[in-house]
Image 1 (cartoon, rainbow, N blue to C red):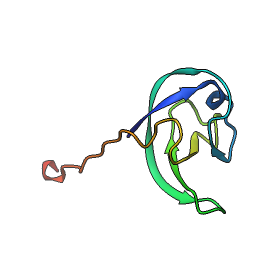
Image 2: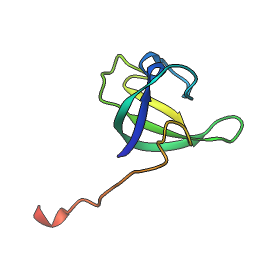
Image 3: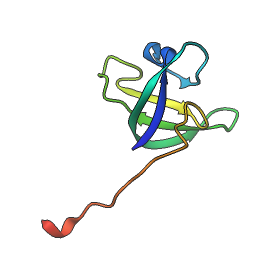
Length: 85
């Protein structure tokens, strides 16, 4: 999970690699980072799953350019405890 800052233009995201361009800061949010990739210019982006619905973004997912909207500032993960099985 990663925390990030939501701006108005993210609500209208429909695909591609998101990079904040317009709109005011709305507030904080968290998304699940499920992977990463590199665009044609070799810039890193994060593949994130959002909980807004499958109708938003790329079927509920978004690719966010690294360094954007504070997504690189704070994240956490955990290892599952399989001993309880």
